[in-house]
Image (cartoon, rainbow, N blue to C red; front, top):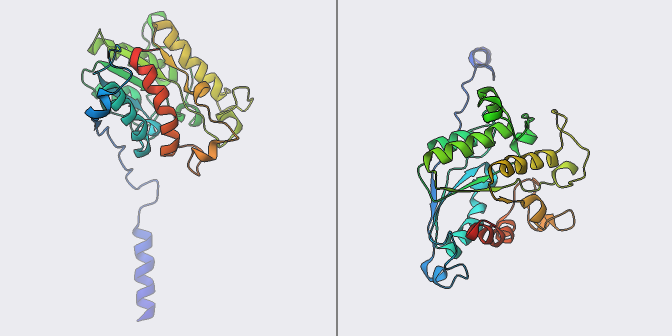
Length: 263
């Protein structure tokens, strides 16, 4: 009897598909998570009368823009700006069309808003997607669709697509936040490179150059976050990549101030 059980178990193992044969779990879609303002806090806001007070804001990005902890920052925006904040972000996303449920795809699915926040992730760099240059997918290359595979091509695609949806839209860009798994993630002078031969600081500079060409205001979170090797453990999870609620509460007021008037 034992011999029969062993044979059956062995046959069952043989019948199981290999990892390569097993169907892949489909990438999740944006859930359009919405945060509403607390009207009592909004009435006391120092930003009453600011350009974007009362705006409808849409947010696009990777896990840093959508993790549950990020609501700590986005609720600060909502309350200080009397704003409705809708998040389209998806964990694992980047600007490259090859990186997860890309920010390009997120922008494609979005409706019309007053303010669009493009929140850069670390995923393009950490997954070795080509960085590209500010000329990618622009008038300079005839909007070459092959450049949608680069970070910069993806950024330029998002800007163009948003302005086709709403020519009067305010677009704001948040650079990638620091991460502490390796030196390149937080040291702007690091010489550690990914497989494309560039550092994370190179990707940050390229993000800013794309926005500079189009006149898109940039919040340089990498430089203004105020978190470094001496204090990051108080603001980051053990993975040294994703922030805790305390980390978001630290950056949230800076983001809200920037979003109030775009500077």
